[in-house]
Length: 478
Ligand code: SF4
Ligand code: SF4
Image (tube, rainbow, N blue to C red):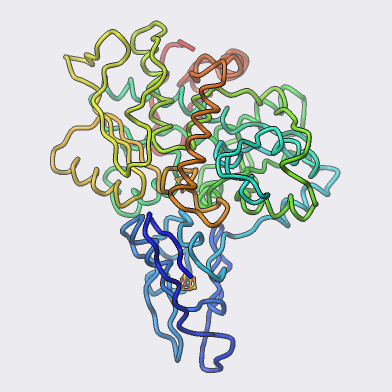
């Protein structure tokens, strides 16, 4: 049997049967918030190391001999939490035995759903809705948005909101961050919505932490708004609200427990389920996902722009931010919406931008120089260029192949062809939506008007930004 890693086939070669060999001493690590590692299931194939090298050029799992057996331990240590693992989860995608696995939170979510005192709110990532069908006899890229919402309602969730809306808030705040930094001369600005990439910078390039935007990721932005804006609007006790994210991502579990991700007073996101965990719950409940009557996201946090939808694809975060940035920069609506230069499955995409029909002089005739990378190995190449004097203004990095559509929490098996079909589906969703720019989303405008004030306001800083790089408030333009 073979498994595809980064477009190449690798044969699974079992080297051991740990449970059948009395000489094998094995360790089980269930401490980490995102990943579990059970050496009793490890056949020593080494594919986890191959994936880590292929995508991230890291090779965190290191071949380690213990007695008669060979394990792939995180840098020779026993625990994932003690290592430089970014939690991208690409090792989980290729591990043939489940020795590496996301830390499951299904039972935690079921307990919340069974508690009559709790208000359980789901928020769903863009990429899950285009991959779910694969586990129910459908094709990659089949869009099951309404069916996903209906299934969550059937499972007992009280409200279902859309993380694509969280992405719209990230976009608006980040577009202003980009504008500020161009004016300050403090580019390049790095996107922050991939927690694996953030951890990579923290671990390996700490001198560049200040370049990461302070804007929180879509799941954290929407999580805090559910606990604050939504709770206040419906006069709910936020302490009773349990926010559950459905994510294509393993690292989002790690992100939700980072220091400072409790700006509402409790964790802004209580539990993260991968797409696979959600599928497990749907199957257990015997819900026929492809044939269930579709339902709509709930008000008031259920309407997103097309810009929010494409966050799941490599280049999508940048395209969303540039759509908004172009309008803010020129102080008027720019006709151009589609930025083909950021799209596609290439590992690195670069462009020098002319925004709209007006040309692109930025503070002294400078163009906007951008780069998009997928996989941390490609990110490293961009960082090398920056260190060697290459100028970039805005850099997007997603750790997983093709972006979150190829995330470590998505259905298996995952090939580049499968990921590409999911990616195309996100652009289809975007194209068919009436609102395709984040700042034009009426819900975004309403939340700023009723609650946050302006982009970058004191309240926006408090709730929509992280602590490592506080930016100035600016005049209200949304
Ligand atoms: S953890 Fe999984 S992928 Fe890694 S060597 Fe063991 S069986 Fe293979
Ligand atoms: S690319 Fe997306 S799925 Fe992969 S680690 Fe980053 S946020 Fe998670």
